[in-house]
Amino acid sequence: VTPGPRRTCLGCRGVRDQRELIRLTRRPEGAVVVDARGRAGGRGAYVCGDGCVERLMKGGRLSHAFRRPSRAEPGLVSAVRERVEGMRIESNATSSRR
Ligand SMILES: [Zn+2]
Image 1 (tube, rainbow, N blue to C red):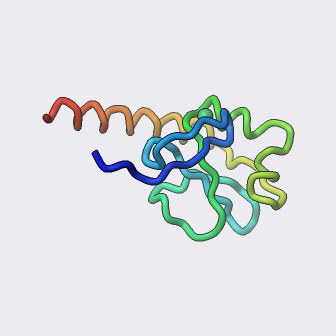
Image 2: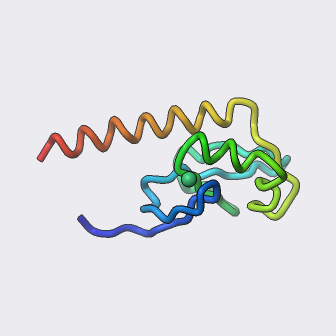
């Protein structure tokens, strides 16, 4: 396995492979959403799960992460959770394939 780029989860400060993290991106109007394709322009923030995104939503940490006034899109936590579950299924499929 080739080691990929590593990123820090802003919720728990854990360093993980970028592909294990969910990239968040900020829309111009300030709503923070899941970056589904992982390559939207602008500043990104990474989290490893829905618990970490909840932590980020407290105390203005999202605004700090994006260095601008930011708010979570309604449903952001469940969007992250769905994505984490999707990745888990994907990695199980990969490991059983060998
Ligand atoms: Zn985390």
